[in-house]
Length: 188
Ligand code: HEM
Ligand code: HEM
Image (cartoon, rainbow, N blue to C red; front, side, top):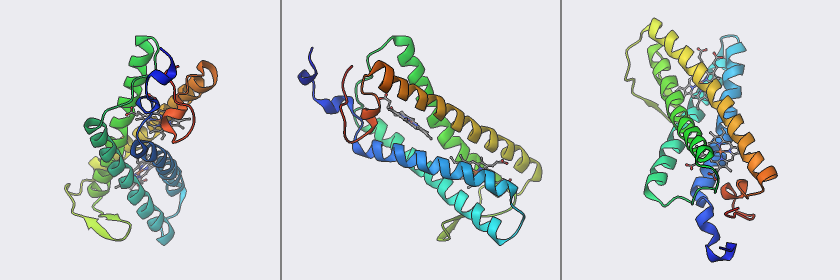
């Protein structure tokens, strides 16, 4: 079958998914870097402000992921890139793991803040009511989970990006164009 036999958009993600995908990349980079910086800062108003921004943008990642998953369930998805079933399964497993982490890391972060006995503010606009009572030991454990989860996101997203680049540059199947508004998204 030739390319023109199937409309190009059956091979491309919708614009909402595309926008949220790249906004998530920017937000995750921001929260990861701010997390590292916060860790090295001395206590004081500057650190409190940095944590406030980290928390708010981290919650934005959670909201974007939930919306994106809702969209994914509701709207038809582009056809998978042709390839061996094993590679397709690996890609699906990678995407699923990333989605799970994009939900878990912010949720654990939020639980950690509550367990520390602090409140979760959102861009200084409002505060979320605490769902967990203060518990120092729990806060420490959640802190470790938060850090491990965040590191996993960065490692897995790096492998995922590398796979996308191999698709684009070596297999030349237009994989990256599927996540971009322009360019040739093809079946391969
Ligand atoms: C995808 C979203 C997020 C990522 C990738 C992320 C990543 C990180 C990283 C890398 C650190 C530094 C860990 C360390 O070196 O000790 C950190 C610390 C922290 N994160 Fe997040 N975070 C996210 C979302 C959130 C959310 C939603 C909250 C709270 C509502 C939050 C609260 C915190 C707090 C309070 C710390 C400081 C912990 C401490 O040292 O006391 N994070 N985060
Ligand atoms: C924090 C960084 C990133 C996260 C969390 C992330 C997450 C995801 C997820 C969950 C999907 C699955 C979409 C779905 O089918 O529901 C996806 C698809 C995709 N991502 Fe990423 N991504 C990140 C960075 C990148 C980067 C840097 C690139 C490119 C260099 C990239 C290229 C792609 C492409 C091309 C697809 C579509 C794959 C396909 O057509 O099946 N992503 N991403």
